[in-house]
Image (tube, rainbow, N blue to C red; front, side):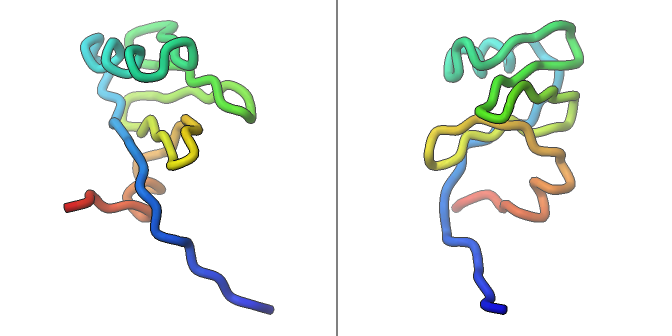
Amino acid sequence: MRKFIARNSYIAAERWNGESELFEHLRENFRDLISMPDSSRIVVTTPDGEQIATIGDWIVQDSSGTVFVMKDDIFNRKYKASS
């Protein structure tokens, strides 16, 4: 079996903290893709359907512009801050 490694790519991401100011910031960037049914969750519309982000999850936009939710432990294993 052939082996592959991920190509270097940059993402934009914010960690959901439940604050309305962060939701407004996300809403400015992602418009109709994000809604907030209550103060602890936001719903992100992705190509694969709706994903729910709870406090501590990451809202990620990849290099192709796709927005999705990622759990904190997975995010921290996969990404590190750029310098």
